[in-house]
Length: 353
Image (cartoon, rainbow, N blue to C red; front, top):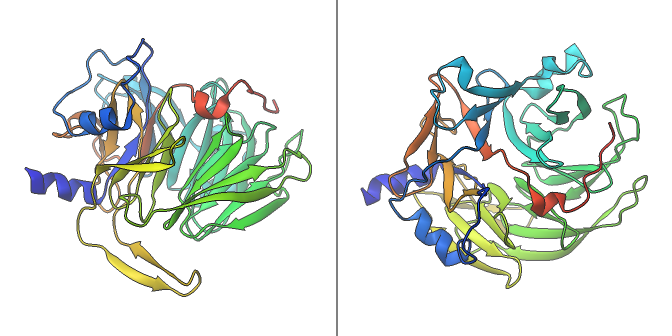
């Protein structure tokens, strides 16, 4: 059994989620999260929905937990590029292979990225694309800033900061790039007013100048991922109601934003090769695994790919990896619980309508 779990972790994707009921203050301490992820516990009476990036059909799909995902009625909401009239037909290909979909603005809007290069902010109520653009380099994550500007991060090695106009009409918007080797995760921290980015080798924080028309990022913090399961970083997401991040790379870890310490959830798994990268004059651990992180009412959900980096099943991140939902033939790349992300939203929930 121990060997089986390690194999699953090798290509693990995870997600974060919070409960809608009162939780003990110590529920989301690092040790409590480690204990939950390594227990046999299966959450009960879960009513929140899960949003998935489904690459077989180039869609974002939201499902009911506890329903049969092969039944169309289990779909709470779905979106593809052609659902938004604002997106031109010749740009639909930008949104192939969606790889992140996260709730923003109190979970009334969705911010997504796709390996085809697409980045979009979509209003759930009418599927209107309030912003969309194209970026090269395999974008993997994005963040909405308090003034309505947007940043994305690409695995080819950069964070891109977009100047989003008051009235969006054209995807060709001004931008500035900032290097981040192997960038895979991006999260706005409303409390600290920092933009956090996850690369292969480091977790970084950028200050934002809050100049809507001339936005700028300045790198102010960097934490090495060496010696942690997050080396080769693949996902970054906040733990609800806490000052903790969940992140993955070779395994899964917690980063405490107050103490700046890493805690191991799952250790490195499988065989990976450390190679020298001349561009950074450093070593990076690279391989086939693809990891991502997130929590819910004291439990995690994960994708444990069964075909390359895809799977048709979402699971709880407990010791037996209990299945939550399966859609035959689906190619899920990432999923998250659909709940407001107050870590990033804070009290500022403004966006151009």
